[in-house]
Length: 273
Image (cartoon, rainbow, N blue to C red; front, side, top):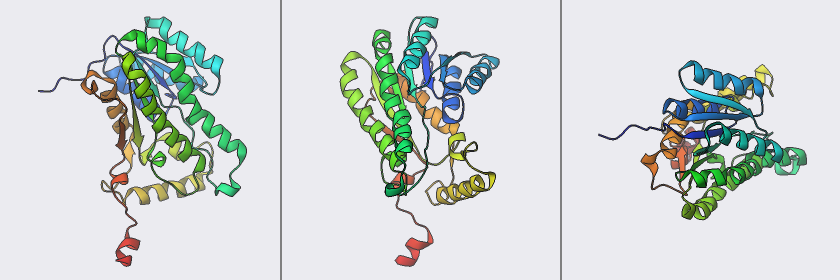
């Protein structure tokens, strides 16, 4: 019988854990026994996640962290390390989708903002956490990338470029940090029923509903025929940071319902045959 995942005695830092996939990851790691530092720029959602974990008997605290701001990152990592004396797990989850537009209409400030959070944020948080992860002797990093970083997607230049960068940064860090005892892997979610996908604070209810209908239609074309749940991403992350994945580093793990395994355009493909 396979052993259960036990993270007792380990400290995890999860960025962007105030909602969506990050919140699910924070809960999954706490359920396995880890102390979780919720590193989130929104104090309301960040503290809500930490309190939710504590209410279920887990161990968690909130620390403010803006992954685009170096002093904020330094303070957050120092705070996390000071609470238990170590950092054993880092999950770089913080991300923003940005606006969609053709490349010749893409706004410079949108490009800069997406790259600053989705790619540079991963670099900066990792850089600050590495000494603690090395000291741990069992350090593990999981970066949340995307299937959009593996192939092109219509009018998503910044997001696709950033997530592709995260994928190769994962491989590079695995090469550099493996000899120092730190494993580095990435997870690429596909269509997931999460807060960022809904963009509820950035779209009208009508636009959000239309976008959601499109996502459901596209998700229905992939082999499993549905969007994923945040817990399904979190379960894979929990495995990757555990001793059960002790020989995995530099791996890019798709959790996408099979979308990258097929070229499916539904009836259009059938009609073209």
